[in-house]
Length: 125
Image (cartoon, rainbow, N blue to C red; front, side):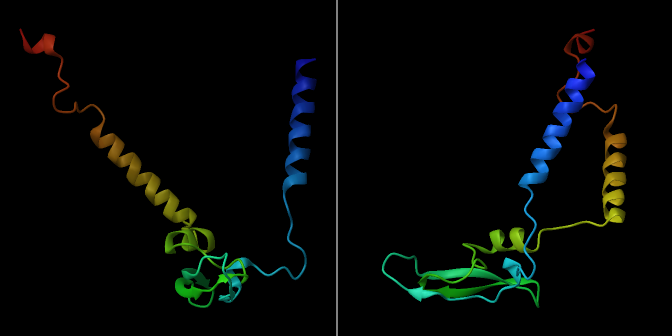
């Protein structure tokens, strides 16, 4: 009985996830591939320097935003722009290399006590 409950719960969870995943419509243009739009000047908007992603150079650059309108390729800072449009990725080979280096470091420090963590009872003998 418990296994059926688990299976039903798993199926329900998968069904819920599948309905929340949005598939872009045909012809949907990615936010990061759009050119920067300065928008229009208005009294209620924030005018100033914003960042946009340049899909050709794969870098973020600044532009002057007038305060209202424009498109979504507009970010408050360089970091947000990069993390949104060009997040760091690693190849599987890079992952294996980093994992191997991490394991080597772990083996080198294994068994070594950090300074100041010696057993005080042993040092009093």
